[in-house]
Length: 253
Image (tube, rainbow, N blue to C red; front, side, top):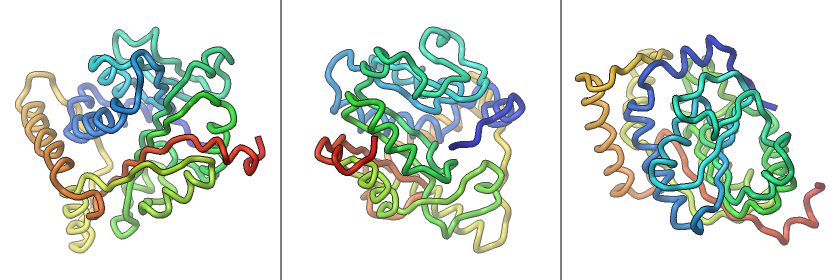
């Protein structure tokens, strides 16, 4: 259903210190702000397609009960071996663990899938106690570039299309918004000027000047997501949805 990184893909996509990148800082903050109010204490959140565990690590540090699964042989961040399962399909987890899951994160995952609705429906069917689904995806086809092709994206979404996919899979849309507004504008400008966007991620040394710059830019981007309305175009979309138990009769589980 989805493409899986090999070892070189993880090395390229998750270089040392990538958790300090402004993009991860800002997305982690937004995910936490949208997710935390929906959960009771100690409810289990499963980050599906968690990569090396960047989000698992961040949200655990904020007090949430986090675990993650990753299909490929990802090199897991230190301290997460008990919380992240690699080379594991979420649907192959122990039935008791699947029944314990109350929220699922799909953070920049479904754009890699051609059969994304079938995947979302399978989450609905096989994780019956999951009341919350939080999804982020790349947005706006007008900024589609070689970067998307290189990283295996099948499309960039708009809010209406993402919401339709989730509703068809058995979920009610609670809210959605564009984010990374300045990234959208810069990407659009690059495309208009026919300047190629780099496919490469660089290592970020902890405590270095580059990490400091990413921290400042990350804080600015966090502030942007609080101040700019979600209806204004951004390079990503976040959507939180709740399980619609009335859909069970319409979905072939």
